[in-house]
Amino acid sequence: MQPDVLLAILLSAIYGLVVGALPGLSATMATALLVPITFYLSPIAAIATIITASAMAIFSGDIPGCLLRIPGTPASAAYTDEAYAMTRKGEAETALGICLWFSAIGGIVGTASLVVTAPILAEFALGFSTFEYFWLAALGLMCATLVARSSPVKAIAAMLLGLLISCIGMENPAGLPRFTFGSTDLLSGVEPIPALVGVFAVSEVMRALITADPPPLPRRRFGSILKGQWALTKRYPQQQVRGNIVGIIIGVLPGAGADMAAWVSYAMSKRFSKTPEKFGTGHPEGLIEAGASNNASLASGWVPSLLFGIPGDTITAIAIGVLFMKGLNPGPTLFTERASSMYALYYIFVISNIIMIPLGIMMIRGSSIILRAPRSAIMPVILLCCAVGSFAIGNNLFGVLVVAVFGMIGYVMERNGYPVAAMVLGIVMGTMFEQSFVTSLIKSDGSLMPFFERPVSAVLAAITICCLAWPIAAMLYRRAGARLAGARAPA
Image (cartoon, rainbow, N blue to C red; front, side, top):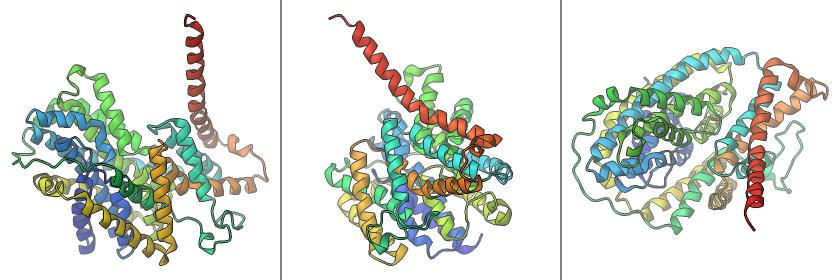
């Protein structure tokens, strides 16, 4: 309740709402641009900006989706057509109200899951050794490839590229410089934060250069935004509960995130609906379930981040960097040694989702002004923020060069269907992955058996190996099916 924390929550909420409402600017990019500002804030205020801005941006991305059929963030893409269909039917207020109301409820439920599960898992995790941490890191990397919407092979390739980038420098168990090519700037490796800013922000600016501006928003006056939401809450309880549960589960999976939760929940809503033929015509059922799911996944995504330092999504990957920078090193001891900071984090989640409702209503009513901002004025400001922020991280121009290089890498990867989130996860987790492996080999005197002999380690190993084999087996199965169909075809 310190004034600087409350002010950070309010300002980052407004910032997140504005950035999320601008088509093409993701919640991840909004979070990445906040990192330079967190240098000058207290630890709790710094984390408050990340949490609040990401929650607001995820909701705010629904506004252009409802009004223009252009999702503001990837998490909004799953139900953009449904929301826009309601707008065409003259129910824009209902669609926007659903997105706002159920996003806030989903965020609070996700926070409850974080409060309940994280301390219990922290006690369990205190017994982990480097063997378990190695398999946990490997499992996180494999999950990132399984949940990617692109080809699993491309996701694995992107993840391996991230691991290769994490090898640069001399911060390795041997203390030897690797892949530095004689550059002293590369001795400390590639900092994750400039890489994240580059792949998500600079690449977005590059994409904006070659795409047309979205159509202007027609002027209109909105009625009551929350009218009828309580009736929908009582009418669709199963959809809310199912969306919250799916969001919590997917949020815990490393590398998944809010956009995957929204896609899965919308698909499940249509699959289990009694009226699936209404989907796509402006039906609120799928909108409720997906809207509850994406915000529930935000809070639960912090569970692996706080416990093990493994990011639940790209937003928490940025948050991990901020946590380390502020001395709040992720790990199970965080819940015993810095318990007051954890309770502060819980309160920030609740406060940000509560103030989402009044600020969200104001944002919806002012959306005609925000969505009319010309892209030609926004993108140069974003590029300037990227350059200034990357310079502030290390106080040298090398950081600016890293952001520019990774911006080009991110642009090329996205153009060719390679998920940048998998590469980011590889960069963030590469050091932990390697150090756990090497330390375990030193402890076991070079033997691999302890990786499989310890009970928890053996379970994690089995799950990881299955995740690794799944995309390969699926590819071979498809090829075998195609050959069989070709052989049966008449000459």
